[in-house]
Image: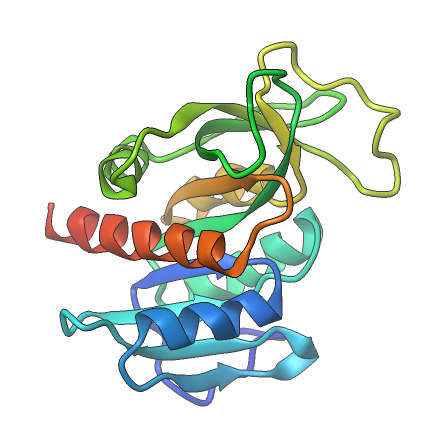
Length: 209
């Protein structure tokens, strides 16, 4: 039974997961025809509605960090979510990765060690197709913000973030297809919208097979 999310509107099988509640609101206004706030408990703003194609979609903020993202994903799974895409920002580690570039995550490892969480291949592939412009694909490392800089990241990681490892590691155990799409650096509103549009299209395509 959900302990932290208190939905007052339906929860869709497909969910877009920004960490920032403000980005959740922005994406609800961008992606949903008539967005309804479905959660405001614990400051984790969530919204439900239909896209312009008539598909139900949930947009739910996860809050900052892996533990919060894991709690939100687990409760969304209990409420019926079956496909979820994290959208957010990352800090480049690869010198060739420029601010504003988009990464479709293939796997995410907790910095300092631990098993990698693999993105659902179908959903990640749909994300690459939905992006519409060239994107980078590859691994990222998720860090503990308190210990950032003290734990080594995998040598092949393109970037670091906070939540992707939690989402991708936990999703399969919950019966959820999980993926992540990130933008390098501090995202503009347009960048957030771009990620959200890509995620919405990818979820719809994956649901249709």
